[in-house]
Image 1 (cartoon, each protein chain N blue to C red):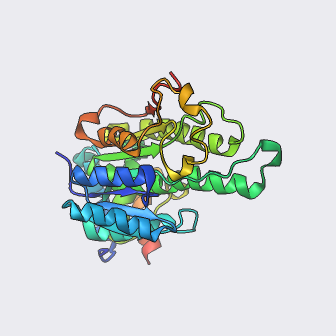
Image 2: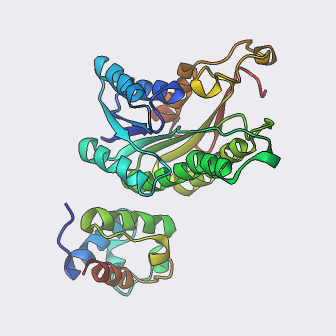
Length: 82
Length: 243
């Protein structure tokens, strides 16, 4: 069952997901860029799967290809779920 | 250590798909047995798996239909966890010389043999990436790498499947997900019953056609833990025909 969506919950889930794919926890912030975190396109596919599993929100390739920061992904998930 | 999950075999009501489904069940995987129209055949395969102590779940569905991948995966995931082994076996033929091949004959073969494999693979990869384990095996053919007059649509679909296999393999290799193909030659199935014969056996170095179980044995290897370092390859199973 998808979890109820709140901004805090989405942020926590995405931070956990980024750590799971190898990002350094101390570098995680809304402003952090994926490039700085060394998060690549395959990592983002996995983040999208985590988001779908947790919140039932589907993020496709076109949705995320232009996103540069962690905060942009969080905002997109929150917007899609409302 | 292989995580908990299940296998899905498309086109598993008979022939090579049925042999693969039985083989993966014998290896301990709960198996989704997909079929389009042969419910009786699929029920027989599922019955054989259950009789031998395995778990089978029938998943009906035409892979060309919109939303087909979801319809196949959702019930399996609910019952058995993520699909960690995907066998894209469903295939059709609609033969004819290229000048006379109709658009529908072309589209039917490309959609079933190639596009459906893309859609099921796309659906499977997310959970496989999360699990850090996955096995995708695409059942291609020696037709594709080799010519066979009257099968330009089939050849294009199978050659496409091999190219697809290689590329997806390199995309996901670092997550413990392997993507391979098998390329059977002449195998005793309904799909080939009208082409086996006519002296074809004389052209096969092994001097016989293959069995579905011999193709399944190769698929079972590619799905095993022991094949973790094998990815992006095509294993030819043809009695030496294309050697």
